Image 1: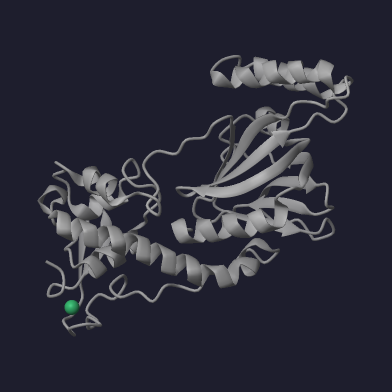
Image 2: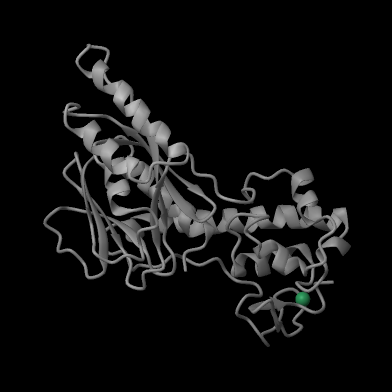
Length: 311
Ligand SMILES: [Zn+2]
């Protein structure tokens, strides 16, 4: 499953390749699972939109879109009809802006872009691939975006745990582990009786820290995964704060060199892995003190630690 560093790497790779491109048309497959928003809504938000940025939020890839109404006479009414059927939430702002944009289209000032976001969660096996149109469509392709540059952006996902949705203002839960300052980080764990490992994996606290990176961060900070979050001193939490960022940044730096393998047609290529110090090394000697690494299960997840280096 792609973890935060992989998702960051993929988002950066996509940003380099597709920012500025315009989505001319969208094809969506028949399988329902990958579509978290209705197909009509996804198509309406994506078609004729310029990709202004691609970034990571938690483990989501967010495409920022400026909806530019080419051929404004036809497009807005179609978009209105589609969205009004749902007719609720803050999304109803978009059709209003669209209809405002319509009269301006002929007025010379140009249409006001309507902002939207395309949100992709890769799930277990999802990948986004930039292909030439003549490239054979892979099995398990659920979406194809035709870009004005002539390329196609395809979403492929054999196991269908990935999700595609559109939003006007996406907000993932939790704080960004790479951005959170020390005070806010410490506050996350105050009064929490759960093991620190579970707290690190709790997406409502931190976005996107996965099992491997939680184990590796706890090792570097010298904290046992089963320790109650609330019992950890500020000094140790400061170490953990540094360790989480360090581990994620190292993994992102490693992933950076394999971007092209991942987002191009050969989406199956993996990432260069961070050299694990504890994760997956049960019974192997600790790299620091040679004590065999222990494995325990916490909240259903394997946790690896050195019983001597971690207290
Ligand atoms: Zn050790």
